[in-house]
Image 1 (cartoon, rainbow, N blue to C red):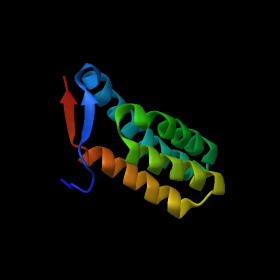
Image 2 (cartoon, rainbow, N blue to C red; image 1 turned 135 degrees about the vertical axis):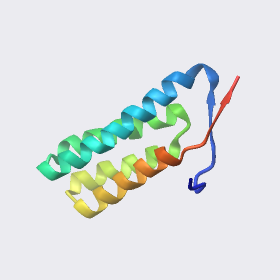
Image 3 (cartoon, rainbow, N blue to C red; image 1 turned 30 degrees about the vertical axis):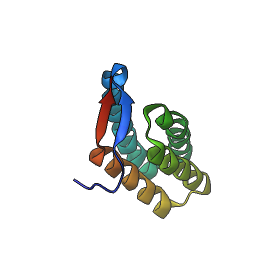
Image 4 (cartoon, rainbow, N blue to C red; image 1 turned 90 degrees about the vertical axis):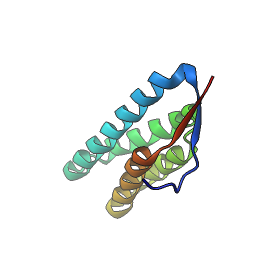
Length: 102
């Protein structure tokens, strides 16, 4: 496990929602790879926009920042940057360390 990112602190009331969110967004990243193969840049842009707007609610600012960059890369149709941001987002969610406050 990579400890590049600081642990995320989340209210314990959001524990189940947090892991559902992470699971859903990991699936979204996988869907974006498929969309990229099909040239569906708008689908990737919308995903990036949505994650950029919601990740902060779960104290995942780095994920939101990467998603914002993904959105921009999709607007520009920059395939190399899209792949890099998707990789980074997925890795962040794989490596995330969480502490739940009571």
